[in-house]
Image 1 (cartoon, rainbow, N blue to C red):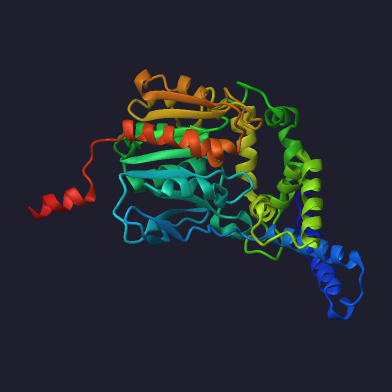
Image 2 (image 1 turned 180 degrees about the horizontal axis):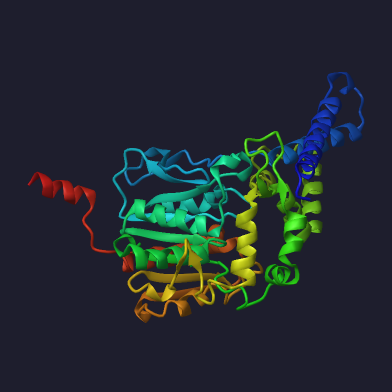
Length: 424
């Protein structure tokens, strides 16, 4: 599997299916056939439309789609996305609301690098931008990064987070969603030892595998069953000539997507069949519920091979974070060194990816943190997605997180107060 041929074969299959969909749509929509009252033609056109869109989305990075924000003055303000820090494997971006006063909470939202783009957190960003200055880690697709840019494993990922936190300053509130939770905890501990003045005010970990063995799931069981040799042989491929990262070893997004889909194959098959029927009856729209979900779900990105393999080996198999034995750039990180960064964990009672118990383990690792600065919440009835983007997040979890931020904000002067003092 570790060959360009395997990578290009998957891309060829995707491209062919996209072409077949487009061809079926064009043929069945030909005006010359419009006079034939055959329902098979409308069904064929619908199949072609759904198929073409689905396979096209697999190689398209979704847009954030956040253009305006209604502020307290009742006006819609333009939202501009500024790149604050630009790096080969990921940028730090800021959602700046033009013409709005700086908000009291500065939030760093750490997006997962687990197959989907940071836009997976679109609804999370929308809910926070209302009264926060929101910054997001926007990870790049590994297939578009030249081999000359070097490697990128979990240590590099952690150091990226360290640099992003330093850039934003000590008045920052960090929220890590899913996969980056353990590495964000390690990055905070790294700062506690190496650069205490740059530590954030608070750290909220949402549904992340800090201790994967605390509550086993199908994901952790898979990590235990397979050997690293099997993973490298079956999951790793080299990027083909079509992309800038030609020759780079990656865990391909298309391969990840096939795994995602197989976990709930029957449900996905039904969803697409139902959508084809809706399109054939003229009941579907460009932004209906099906398209909104699958435009994001099908848009996958490649991960560097070293990041994927080191995550499995060191976080899941070795449990280095859970055992407080994680090493970054030759330095052994001690999570117990976190003493003044408030830490909160959020879990979903029905989360089958990062089950309750895996994330709250972070609090036990923070041995140097007073109990008054620790908090946890388990959301009843919530699954994995719901705890950061669904109704549970909007109605229950987000208010708790905002309250946690307010309670642990450091008493620092705002830029306006600093300017007033300088002009005095």
